[in-house]
Length: 274
Image (cartoon, rainbow, N blue to C red):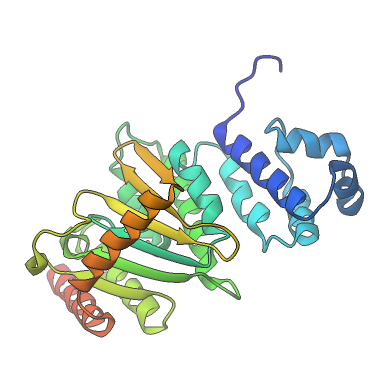
C-alpha cells in the first residue's frame, strides 16, 4: 500500500538478506533461479516490503550458507516481538564467533528460562497483554537456540551479584533460573563469572555491555539503557568497552567459584520456597 510504513524489523531482515546475497556474489536474478523464487519477490524482501515464508527462508539459508539465520530470525517479523534498538543485535548474534556480556541487574536474554523471561516481560511499562508477552517469550527462547547450534559462539557472561539476588518471578522461578545457568556452565556451554558486591565500584557499573566478535569483520559493542540501546563499531569505543570488561572481569570470581555461588543461591531460593 502506498505510504505504508515498513517495520524496522523487516528493513533489517531485508538488509541482511541483501548483504548475504552480495557476499555470495549473486545477483537477485541468479538467486531467484537457485531458490525457485521470483526476482521481484526477492527485491521486495530486501526492501522490507514483503515477508518470506518459512520455506522461502530455509531455501535462502541453504543456498546462501547462512547457518539458518534467515529462518531463525523470521518469527520476529510477525509482530512487535523485540525492541527496535535490539533487532540488529539479534541478527549479529547469529553470525558472531564470540559474545562477552556483562549483566548488571537481569539474567542475559540468551540464558533466560521461560518462566524468568515471562516475569521480566510481565513487569514492562507500558504493560504487555498476554498475547504480546507470549510472543516476546517465544522470540527470546528462539534466540537462545544458538547455544545448541553445531558450532555455537563462545559465550562469556559476567554477572553482577545483584542478578542472583534480585528475586525476579519469586523464589521458585529464581531457583530454576539459577540451576539452568549452572547447568550451562557445567556443560561448558557458557563461561560464567560473578562480580561480587565486595568488589565495590567497577568500570561497568553504569550499564550492561555486550561485545560481539566475528571471524571476518571488526568487533562491535552494544550498550543498552531504558527504552534505548546503541551499537558501536568505532574501534576506539569498542576497545574502551573491551578494556572496561577486562578490568571488571579481573575483580570477578573464577568460573568454578561462580558456579558454587550460583548453586548456593539457588538452594537458598529453594529453601525459601519450601
